[in-house]
Length: 381
Image 1 (tube, one colour):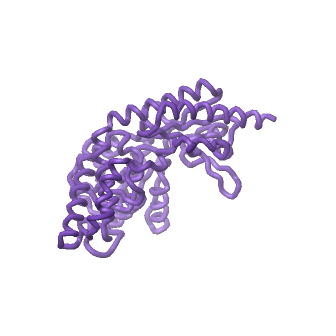
Image 2 (cartoon, one colour):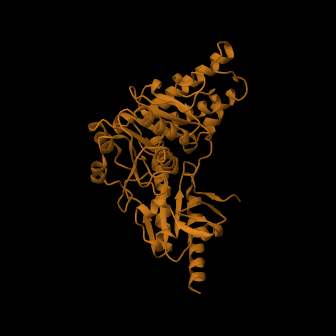
Image 3 (tube, rainbow, N blue to C red):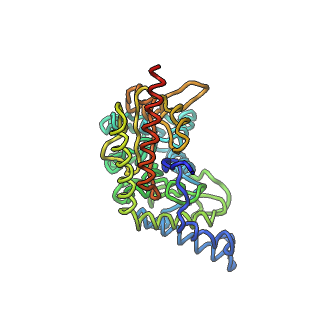
């Protein structure tokens, strides 16, 4: 029997509807979208149809969508493109202390090349301190980048407030929405952001495709050079089949948002309730309400998460700590949230999806609780 999959925040399977939409562009419609003949025109039409589907989900114009190779490239393009295009205005960057490496590593690279970087702290639930953000802004600040929803604990940030603050000071605001698209509303008009990143493999589309929303009027410096693809903003022949898949996934995400969110939340809450009932000394990490509906980060005392995961052969999940050179370390997100060490070291991230069933959840409760109890008994020996 396959392990129970509770790691949807890491990646999602390709939805059957998405796969069906992609198949013609892996077989018959193989043309280059830049070609002027029949094969190229069919491919170009598919790319533009997908652009419209992504734009429809985000409530923006199709011309504001740029296709990329995934969330990491979208973040790189947004951050590097924005600060490099605005060097004449300033060079200061602000991010939160709980960003994904696809943001933090980009900013550290820029910091090493003359762009001062400031980190804004979060509270114990993972929510950014708005007062600290406002105090950190300076005349040289050109970019604020704060993720919409955290990949580890699911906490949703007050992006609308951040956008309003950025707008007041003439600062570009970017949000990494890889984890929030398809799990909560991501209307760029309501969020007020200038730039928003999407990763296809988080919303039941293929790996290796993503998109960047670029609000009309925002100028980015190109980081991919070559021919004039994607409105002359991102060179490289488009990955037509995967773009078609991303477009279909976005169409489904909008169509079924309410149903999918309700199901994922029901499965997540059933899992947490069962674990609470079965295991003592369990801690919820993240905001209890303001979080995406599928994410459950739980910490257990007297447990090493890496060892626990190795014992959970029947469960596919992630830990809140990583093992480097044999030494277990707590994730930067849990450190920033000041999660007590005894819980942080034993933290699991469990994320549900559209395909998760009640039967899987009930089995997972029994497997996880039994393994935790065994590990605790071993710890106390």
